[in-house]
Image 1 (tube, rainbow, N blue to C red):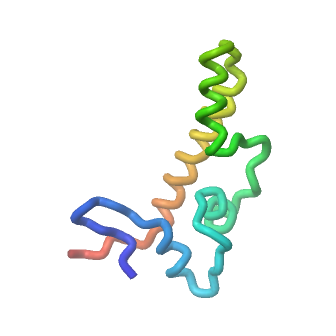
Image 2 (cartoon, rainbow, N blue to C red; image 1 turned 30 degrees about the vertical axis):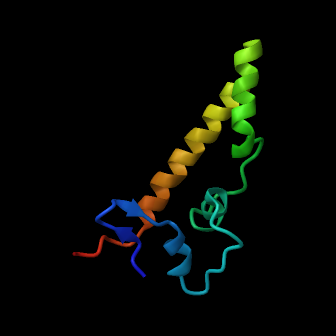
Length: 95
């Protein structure tokens, strides 16, 4: 199974699960990959992605920056995980 689609420059992280012998993850959510592939513990006090729009709207209404700090921390963790997962992908297949 190819993890890369060079014509569209899309990388499928799903294949990381499918290509690993004996690896059966419950889902391919980023935090699941973070725990099982990167070996990190579950996030503590993380704001769920689906709550981010409402938290940001609340910040705009009342100016309380605490929700924004949680959003930024969540996004930083996502970016770090994506970078680590990309580094763990097998080498690009030559076209």
